[in-house]
Image (cartoon, rainbow, N blue to C red; front, side, top):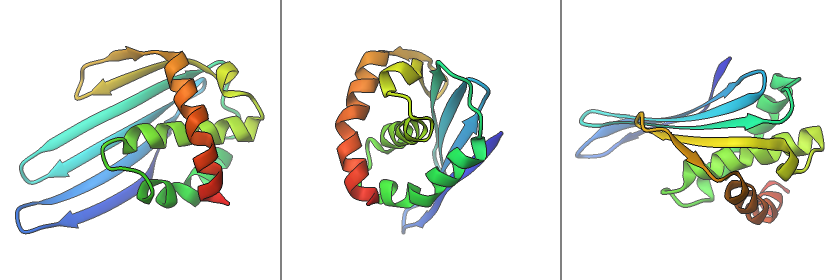
Length: 140
């Protein structure tokens, strides 16, 4: 099921646009979708993360993500927000299921505007571990 986890409307003199983030939880993975809809531009990006375990309680995950998504969105740079949100969601799933990140993630793909790229799972896990201390400070 697809859930909207963050939405922001911005109006400037030059453009009006909406930024929306979605979370789709499947049986053995998650998809984090970013959508930028403006008067003159449209941008779509997606992280697909396959997990080594089945997702059991998607509403518990959704509740924990929604509780702190605005803090995470506002405290990181604008360029990497989709990546940070994807890592935050994986971090949250890891904490809920009490599974280490390196055992949780099977594969990671990134899709900017339809071009699918396979990412290094090891690099994704390492960068999530580096961010975990900042997530803990931010959420406490």
